Every structure is written in C-alpha cells, then in structure tokens.
Length: 163
Image 1 (spheres, helix red, strand yellow):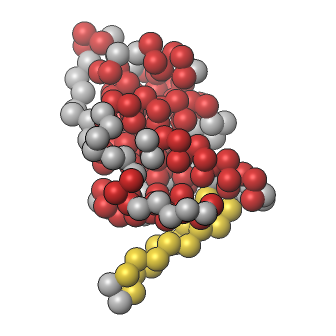
Image 2 (cartoon, one colour; image 1 turned 180 degrees about the vertical axis):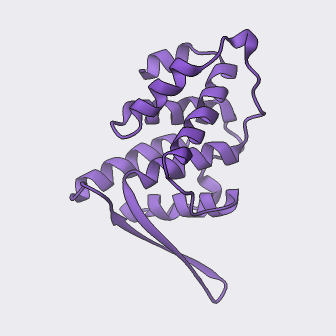
C-alpha cells in the first residue's frame, strides 16, 4: 500500500485502518512503554531532539493541525516502512466495506500510540523517572547498526509529527 493509495481512502477508512494497524502491532508483541498522551509526546519529542534542535512535547501533534492529517501521514509512514508495511497491507485486506464499518472516534492517543509502536520497531528505549523528571535513553535496535538509520527515522517521524 502506497501513500497514494492511503490518500484515496476516506477519512473514515483511514481512521479505522490506523486503529487496526495499532491493534495488530500490539498483538505482535509490541508493548507501549507509555500510558498516556503526554508521556508519548514527551518520548517522541526527546527522540526527535537527538539530531540537534530541541523539539518540545507541545510541538508533537499540534492541535492546530487537523488530526486527519496526522492519521494519513502516520499510515503513509507505516506503509512505507519494511518493518510495518506487511501489517498495514494485512489490515487493509481485512477492512470491511465502508458502509459496514464502525469506527471509534480517532484520538491523538491512537496516533501517538501508532508512532511509538513504529519507533519500537527501530529503536530500543528506556524511560526512567527520578526526582519528578522523566529521562529517555535511546539505542539503535535489532539489526540496525548505523547512525544513518537513526537519522532517517528521526526525519521520518519529524515529518509526520511536527507540522
């Protein structure tokens, strides 16, 4: 599935698709290390800030940008990545006809959850809380061994989240 194909889906279909993709990622064993929107924003902001230029958590999924834009862009990111493309294709194949589709209202939490799940396919990270401060530690995960991959992932996530 390409970004063009995702763009051709209705907002309703994209919302349902993102919900399905997140469920499939979680069913595959990915556990989200954050349990609320603010923690997810902080985690993504800390990750994006690694490549120079601090990104504030308020810059991640800004309310001034329609949520549908983020839904579309996150799906395109997931569909374009070799680690998650199969999950998107499988979820698309299982989508019911739009007239039979019930969609929970999409929330920023779903979008952030999908981004954090995507990040976990690329990077290992630890979250520690000490003296009221949250610290994030990132390390290249799995078969990836280069700073170039981290830079590519940072740019991809930044292009989706900071509009």
